[in-house]
Length: 116
Length: 112
Image (cartoon, rainbow over all chains, first blue to last red; front, side, top):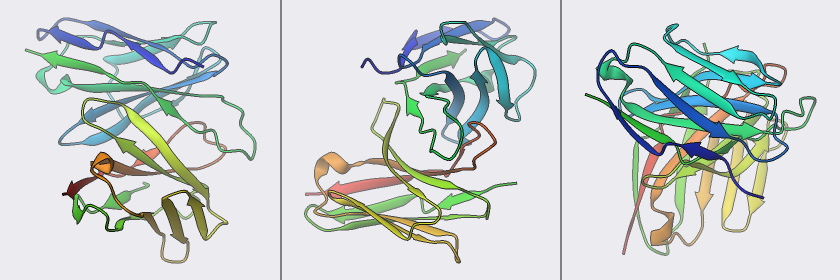
């Protein structure tokens, strides 16, 4: 099975611009989560999508948004970029089984966003 | 809210055992995970343990869980230079979707 893929791998933007990141989950996985990783704040949860609906959301401003398509692929959008948005953005997919089984996440390689 | 703590650095000699520790605060944590992140890469799931278990062994990896003290550890036997990476402890609950909480990560350096 192919793993989680994220595009692009690297991105350079300037303050005030917007950016869209893409994530293709493992085939058959229905849940996609997004994380921001920075040296100062560590790994922080942004949001989770399941069956095209946002199921969970972390504590990020409304400039951060996402969506999921019917094929489970997900996009994350950041508008009005700030210098502090420079980070590694990680996407993780999981089967989304629910119930009493662990819904283990599998991570993609990440998109490194640099805001100048 | 939930919090997961880890020591930030650990150095060991090649061939020795490494023990990476983690503490968490959420008593309703159902699953606890260990992930590995190598430079420039995403996170790789190493192993997980259900909260009603005390121990889980998987080849060179041994996970110990002390639920009373909310303490989790990862032991890597016969540590190799390829084990050098950042190790993240994470916890999640059932019924809340995928709201994982990660620790800050422990940077393991394996010295020859």
